[in-house]
Length: 322
Length: 298
Figure 1 (cartoon, helix red, strand yellow):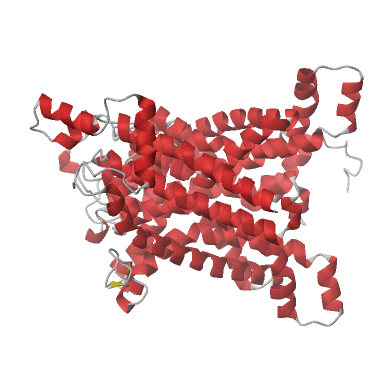
Figure 2: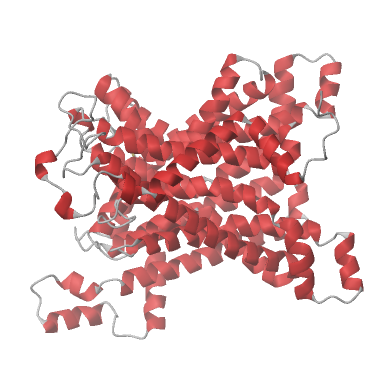
């Protein structure tokens, strides 16, 4: 077991090392940091002085080493546009993205799994037929189209939910701004979270449904039924437990995609998260921000995936003895 | 009952008959054919070449569709803010979608199939390295990788979009091919071929590939829709195909600014076309996966 865990952690480190290399290349070689830092009216001597102070005159190995040491100390350089530390700017936007992702994920898991179980159990119900066709629409509608449709219906035609921003926020003691705790904040969260969660919901629904269909045909379910257990304990306790393992794997695997689509969602709803920051940094050639975003998001993804894999190995002994 | 002693049907004809029984799949194929034809013959069908700046006139800007009040004759679905005919832009835009979709699926299935064959056939450290690399790419997702790649390489082109999506796209083909190769490798006919002294290359090409590649079709059918969706998403974000080329995603991005003004028709038609392409591909993919994996249809 510990061999598996340490192997998995090593692998995560290797991935982060490779990502940090990409981050370094972006930071150092796309655009000229010295010119960008010195500003428009700097003389050649000033630019040279900055080049030396940033260590850009050294060999590339030393530059990379410096980049890594700086990054490990939380120093990712400063934004070319706002002149503020890049890490601070990205961290400041992170709560918005994480709350959006959590809300979307919860919607997707609760409704996707619940519907999947019910539809597998009652295939002839009207709701089931509707859900099966609906899930096809769910995986066929691009996220941005879902967002625009939701705005069109629930913000323009019938103004129930606000179409942009995070609304009223409360700052928690450790500096995290949350929208979860105010009515207004929650109202602002509804449309973006639905937009981001729909694709995931449809995927989880289809996965749970096919898994449940298979589980319900198996012998242990027939035994449980013969024993006289009632319907819902069979569905949710016996059958669903086995289906949850692939569902959890997919949730972990889809996290990267969730981050990708959060960029789209944030753009549509002008959500003040990291995705919007990244897009404006891309259009402004603000490479320190882009590089910081990539390294930070990669770290999150790697940590999350490693955790999912390790949990999975705890739950399923077959994996760790491979 | 006159035809009771019919000749045994060929496998192709049987497949066709089973296909025709699935109304949804036929429906999807029908819509796809329509879109394909529309895209193929766009220069002859479209009333206007939407990217020939000389044919645009600001006088025609933001015309409503023909059935609404103020609609004008050649602009059946109305025009956008630059006086571009929406129907024409959709026809040319679905060309972009299909070209990107076909190219990426073709490229990634060949690369992925080849990589998966090598990983599954040789195993060992090569397999470990390839698959670990694939796992990492998969955890970042094709979507995120393509977005970051294109975000950094600005002044993009259709070719760059195809490359960006392919960076992560090959992985699922490689994984599918690998697991399929691992099964076929243990078959008796492979052992037999090895016993009579066939070379590795010959075994791989003659015995393993023909028996292992079928599942790639299911992946390709699902992937086709995903790629088209991703292309539209990238263009929607402004990092996809350049602004000088038609794209359904870009049309929707431009139309989005007008929905508060009630001009919903700017996004309705491109949205419907984009969705029906992906929807039809998913209908076909559903049918194909049941056809290739009969267990799923029980």
